[in-house]
Image: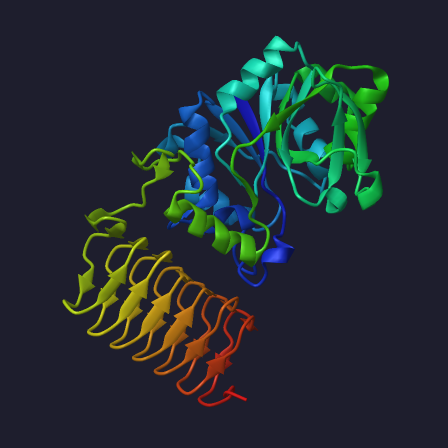
Length: 384
């Protein structure tokens, strides 16, 4: 089985986390999302994957190479210009000679791919679109089907009083190679507004696969943080290179489970009086000093330091973050190499990009965003 992963987006909505990192490489439980996706595809029998890259492609290539370390064969189609979702797959068409998967590289889901493939074959579909149900369909492209699941039409961002369905495109497809003949070669083309409506108009059997699997668009900081909360609290499952625990096959974070819901990586040093409230996942070689509180759901990357008396509550920390004594971080995202000074407060919804330095005495209220390399001098932001 083969697959194409559309991983070329710039991650504009995730900025500044994606200023220096491709969106598919943001860490999920301390491993790049793309790595977890590729391992999951391997577990479902996908042996060859083409990664359609555009933004910072060398970051991906240098990490995964030919895929040998993951047990899948990786290929990197070249695009002279952006070709869109359908155009990127058309660019690899010569290598696709049987039914294959297509994935958006920013969707986190625990979808059963085997069931989707069986549905596709049972329906003798030429294209199967996985669908997810949303509360408010007005911001999406709605898919309307007949009772058998065959797609009747697509309605792009319908007004609330005209939305006859709450099923929307979930960003996973199974396609037969012959449908690619209807995509113009070398031109920008989209599945959502180009190929799929055309196939339906032509009478080609296009089916929707309604799925109630966990589904989250990773494209915003809020959603990115929520995925970690859901994983740690057992609301989502996602096979991808980790041992599985619990009734929902929740991903088990790397490291040793030292108590129920607390995973600690190799080489960590945690003072005896530290308060650890599950669920918490610490990467390797972290240091948590005396009197600190680490309160879940929380993920901390490798080589982080939490100073004496600091409180880190519901946050997501990447690698090598330094949290000063008596600092407080609450439900925020802190990227790699950030330094948070003594007594600093970082409020809910804040995003600190890689290399940020916040000196002592600063109070970052809810939703403050600091871009890569920003240096906030002592006392620059204080409480009103």
